[in-house]
Length: 188
Image (tube, rainbow, N blue to C red; front, side):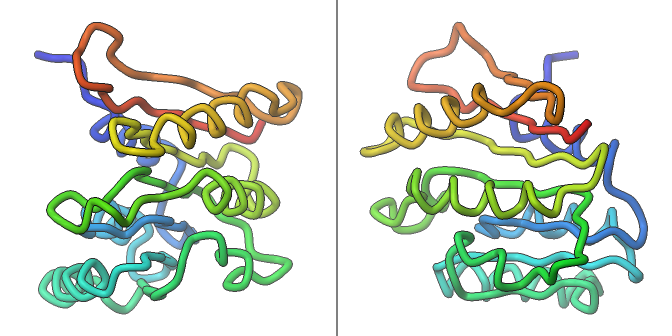
């Protein structure tokens, strides 16, 4: 048995705090793997709100949702995750959220997440995160601009008040080529 990679572990962490009827956010829909996972977790009474700037990602994800019968509980938005606050009303509490930073695997490698928009989204989500809820950031930094985003996100997470949040960093440290790592923010 091997240690789980950051992406696999992200699902373990979300599976512990997300359940039927919950509202969750997939901030970077991408190929839809996290969206499908979250839709299964929240079930038919829950709600997944997904964001991506690439039409191809949203189309592929919508196809998978339709094929698996999970479309009803998912709303996909063709906009950046920095606009997440526009889709949450004042009383909405989220159980979890996930970000896969970097670029869409198999997609246009020039379209990448940015520190400013990612941090805008995280700050907005923190206002809606319920006690015991988690925001997961899977950080890929091996692309142009990736280290800048990585550093900004790590610095932000390190500065979160420990009385309100616990922040976990998980990742392999003996792999080449900037292996992805995970940051998990949990509201106490």
